[in-house]
Image (cartoon, rainbow, N blue to C red; front, side, top):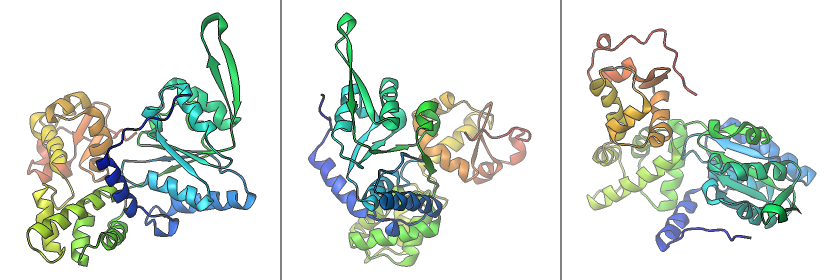
Length: 345
C-alpha cells in the first residue's frame, strides 16, 4: 500500500507549531459558533456514554473559521486519536486503504477539503462509511480480483469550503452537517485577547477592538493581523498595541476601516467603473482584477456579499448601492437592480 505523502520543511514545521499554540484544545476555549458547539457536544457526550464511535460529521463554511480546530477538539473530547489528511493528497484507492486500515476502533479520520477527493475515491468511501469495509481491486484485465478489507468502526469528519461540490451520495452519508458562520466582533475580541496572552503581546482593549472589527469575521485573519500589528509596534518603537497603533498598522496593509483590503476594493471598482455597474460574469471579473476565479468565489465574495457590497444574479455579479456610495458613484447611475434576486448559493 502506498505510504502517506506529505511535503514538509523546517519553515512549515515552525509555522505548524506556532499555529497550534493559538488553537483552542477544548470546547470551552472555542469562542463563538454556540449552536454548532452545542450540537457537537451532545454528539460527543452520547458517543462517550454508549462507548461507541460517533456518527460521521461534515463541517462546512468559508476558510479560516475553525473547521480543523473543531475536528481536533471533537476527537480530544471523545478521547479518540485523530489522523488528518486532505482531499488532494488521496490520489489512489491504495492511499485511502492505508489510512483506513491504520485506524483503531473509535478513531477519527479528518479529511480537509473533502470536496476535492477524486470521484473514484469517493466511491470507495461509501462502503467504508456505511459498512466499515473496503473492496480493493487487485491486478487488471482477466486476472482482476477483489479483496474485501474489514476496517474498525471509525468517525469520518470532513471539512469543506464548498459544500455544493460534494456529490449527493457522499453528502447523504454524513449523519450531521454543521455550517460555521463568520464571527462577531465580540467573539473575535475574545480570540485576540487569548492569542495576545499566548504570544506575550501587550495590547489595550481599543487596539484589540480595532483589529477585531477589521478581520472580516475570520479568526485566522484576526490572528495573522495581530502578529503584523505586533511587528509594526515593535519596529516603530511603540510600547504596545493601542487603537491608534493598530489603525496605522492596518492602513499600511491597505485594510480600511470597513475591513476591506486592496483586492476587495479592486473587485468593486472593476464592477463599478470598468463595467459601468453592469452585471459581470466571474470569468470577466477574474481577468479584470488579475485573480483566480476560485479565489474570488471562495475568499472575497462571501464577505462582500454578507456585508452588502455585492450580489450574485443570474446575469452575473453586481455592486450594490452601498458599494456605489462607498466610491462616490450615484446610485441612480447604476443599472436597475429591482426584480433581480441574488443567487447566493
